[in-house]
Image 1 (cartoon, rainbow, N blue to C red):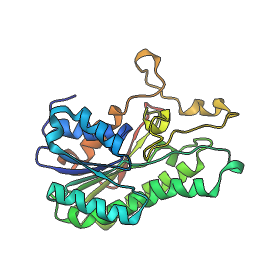
Image 2 (cartoon, rainbow, N blue to C red):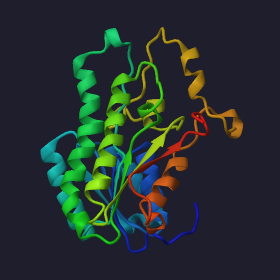
Image 3 (cartoon, rainbow, N blue to C red):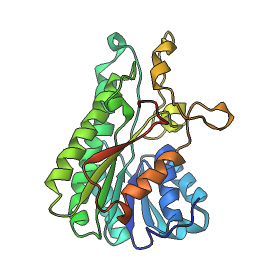
Image 4 (tube, one colour):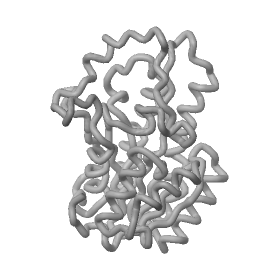
Length: 268
C-alpha cells in the first residue's frame, strides 16, 4: 500500500464497504489518511472491514444501511455525515449481480438489481448532496461497469443498471459543475470481488451464478489482455481502489463527467 496523505483532511462515505471492492476502497483511503464511514447492509461485513483496518480503525466508523431502502439511506447518510462532521467524498460502491437466461429471469430479480445498483446510487447521492455542497473539493465516485458499454451475456439486468449509473453520473456532473462538485465513474471489468466469486452473498453483493448451461465461449472477448500473476483470470479489488482514491482526491480536481475503465485492456 502506498504511503500517501492526499486524504488527510478528507471525510469520506463509502457504500458497500463490508466486502469486495468497497472494502478495498475503505482500506485504501484509510491508508492515505482519510476519515471514513463504511456503510453496508451486513454488520458482519463491516466488522471484518474494521478488523482489517488495523491501526487505521481510529479513523473509521461504520453504518449499517440498505441502499435500496429510502428510509435506511436517509438515516444512514445523516448518521455518516454526523460522525464525519461533514462530507468531502462519496463513493457509491454497493451493488449486486444476478445472472440468468432472459426467458428465466424473474421480474423480482430484475427489479432488485435495478433497486440496489441504480436506485441505490440515486438515493445515497440525493441524501448526501447537501453535505457535499459544504464539502472541501467535493467529489462523487460512482460504480458503473464495462457491461454498460459491452456485451456481458446473461447479465442484462446488471448491464441496464450500470448503464443507468453512467447516464446519471454524466447528468449530475453537468448539474453540479458550477457548484464545484465533481462526478465520475469507474468501470471495473475482470475484477475479483464478492460479486464475481459469490463470497458476498450475505451482503449487498451477490455472486454471478451463471446458468448451468452457460456458453463460456461468449466470455472470450471480455478476457483481460494484461497478464496477471499466477495466470489469474481476475485482478484484485485493489486495482479499482487506487483509481477510486485518485478520482475522489484533489489530484482529480479537473476531472468530471467521465469514466475510467479498469479491465486489463479487455475492451481496447
